[in-house]
Length: 213
Image (cartoon, rainbow, N blue to C red):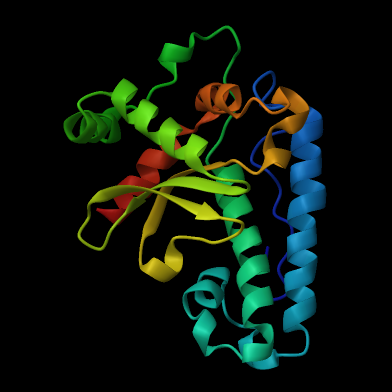
């Protein structure tokens, strides 16, 4: 799989139906094979005529967007952001048995201790994160990121913006574009957010956190 041009659709680390009943099979198929693939196709189409930038990674295209030719800056920003955001979102989830109580899908090990230290409890962290996710107007994302000073910060981004140009490192993110949940929850974003906590891959999140500290 190429991390530079031409970008390719990376397979999910689980089956399309693996996140049932929390995220439906049809939602995952459309989200991955249609919407993400469209961002990849458009990004490759933009870079096709600009060989000087074909060895740049997604992160480099986003962080150094102002170094690109003006004619392609906005389109690269939107489509590289779409690819980065979707890859991050899909890779931070994993299947959990519907018979497992929701309370059991909590962070573990060092990251859990860190959340408890910073936010007093996982429940408090969850409520704050959910508030940010609900606050996104229209389409976008809610994030937990790490600053250059190794501090945790909540933030939201609109459309396909990412935290990367602000020198913030993503740790956890939820996609609150309506296509991420409408087939399963209609317009009930709050319920989608609540159920999404059942499919977070906390091992992956802790791995990201440990790499950053």
